[in-house]
Amino acid sequence: MFTGIVSDIGTIESVENRGDTRLRIATAYDADTIDLGASIACSGVCLTVVDKGVDGGRSWFDMQVSAETIRRTARDQWTPGRRLNLERAMKLGDELGGHIVTGHVDGIAEVLAITPEGESHRIAFAVPAELAPFIAPKGSITIDGVSLTVNAVEDHGPTTRFTVNLIPHTQTVTTLGTLAEGQAVNIEIDVLARYLQRMEHYRGAQHV
Image 1 (cartoon, rainbow, N blue to C red):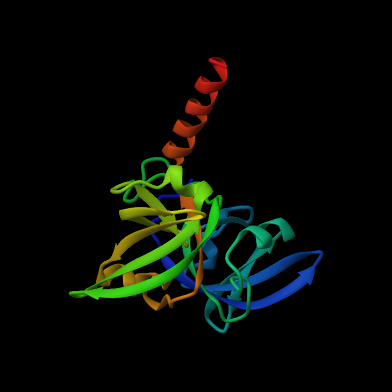
Image 2 (spheres, rainbow, N blue to C red):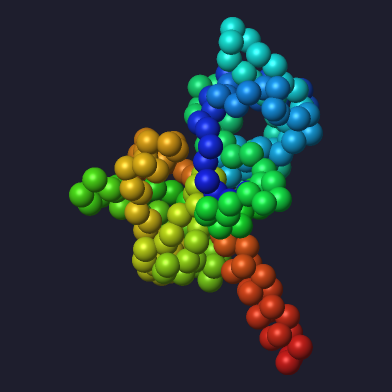
């Protein structure tokens, strides 16, 4: 379980195909504090640490990414040199600074427009219409592992458009500050919205 508050930006140093795809990610985390088998969210994707170490004074950890995960996450994400938003799993008693995040990607969004507003940026995204019921103004959403608040939502047939606001701090401490139009990002809907939708579906089925 995570909160969507990024604590480091890692960089993919190498990618190897060993059945599954194996990544080596450079990080500012102290390797001594990373447990084998630990969960780390990598741009919103919960992955398991399979190896770790230090090379040239820089810590690293290895992750295995299945073909299914690659199919369901943003294109070009698992490539050498790609920067990833990193968050370590919550511990009991940690401050919940964002919202509850599971690290399970629900869909892919595309950046439509980036508009400066003062020192902040308003980012517009398009998502498939099947995610529309889970996205609401002032609701929470996770974009590439970052907990954000939805500003506005507009439905346009097969797609839904929504916007978020990025303050300067978020632009600096996450990869979202370098987003470009046309770029694909990972989306996780609010877990509470997911359960509410399931309850509504079950309630409707009971009355058929």
